Image 1 (cartoon, rainbow, N blue to C red):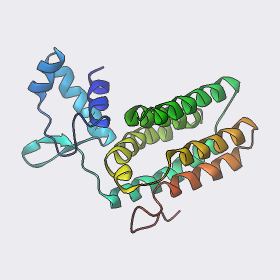
Image 2 (cartoon, rainbow, N blue to C red):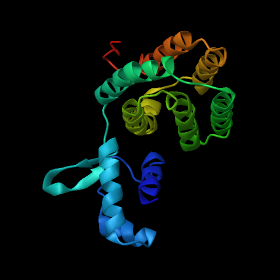
Image 3 (tube, rainbow, N blue to C red):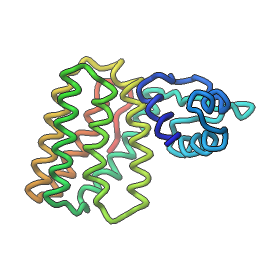
Length: 206
């Protein structure tokens, strides 16, 4: 619970990149002891949202555009593989469709954090049905970093209409619903690559 509260604070930018995270202060704000806060920060270190600096100082991770390229390169590999090997059914498709609708509604209302989280649910609903738990855990961590990248780096560099992202999600979902997983995997790989094209000097090389 503590990890999720801190994660939401980071992704909503109530805690911003570079901010120092003090166990005692967070514990007081949440009304808990320092032990669950310490454990939560370890979890967030593992996902990459929290960085250990000099003197073991903990802070919210700051990403550069080059960092974003590396994150997206790994996602291209893992997420396309996961979708190609997904085990989908009508219930899973309906959940992904609901996440897409929630992202579209959040976008219309200008609720960026809610849109990021709904987009995250869309992706996870699909890739989490593959049979490889190690890849799922890796993608979960990459989704944390992707959400941070979108909130703190990509939106600052982008003037694109968010409707394009939702349209791409719709095409991915349509292919998945038809059972054409190779095509859905190809679409999701292109979608991830195109998310950073024109925003960074380096290209996603996959």
